[in-house]
Length: 122
Image 1 (tube, rainbow, N blue to C red):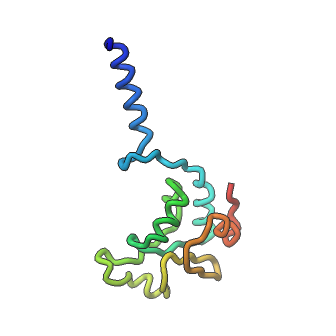
Image 2: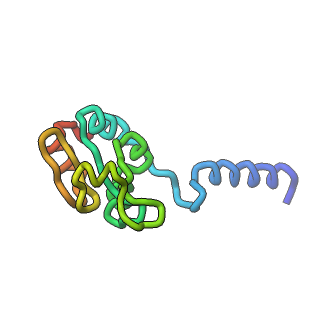
Image 3: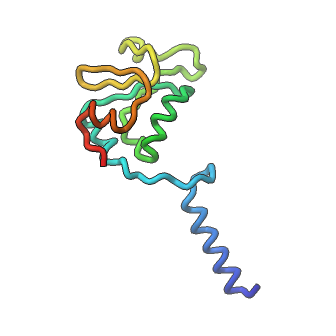
């Protein structure tokens, strides 16, 4: 293999590696950025716990756009209860979505979140 071929393969490998995250999975598109921002701007809040599989699944639906969701962590670091903030808010299950005048427990589809918030899902 000549030097040009080796350099080409090395550069190609670097480009492919830069398109993946630390777990080796292809980084998800941020196509829900506007939707996630609209949810937050509409007053929607998601209460959850880091150890909750449904919460993690809910966040994964947004891909990288989850950074724009108003997510409130309720679990204490050692899983020995929940934060006082979530106790005061009356959170009993995870995830819990709160919209203006309404609270829904459980994982919701993006379509359901769109209907409940009035935010357009594109």
